Length: 93
Image (cartoon, rainbow, N blue to C red; front, top):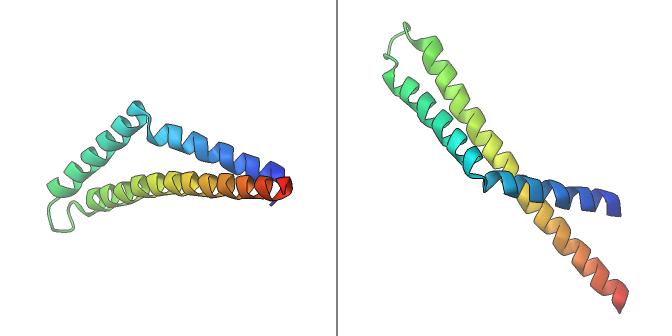
């Protein structure tokens, strides 16, 4: 990765961390998850409520994927920062 790409990865990681630690984001994700979980639990077991069950299941999965992607960006940014620091120290010697 070029230095610019490393710096961009670090920036994306910091932005992802800020979002994951943001009270409004956490609240919105929790509200959406809870609403779709209620929908999933309220759906009857037959084919009648199948579209609602499927929608709720997909939304819960999507919300989890969003959170996992943001967490991955945080980890990648942290790794990029550590690599950059190691590179800088090596250049100093």
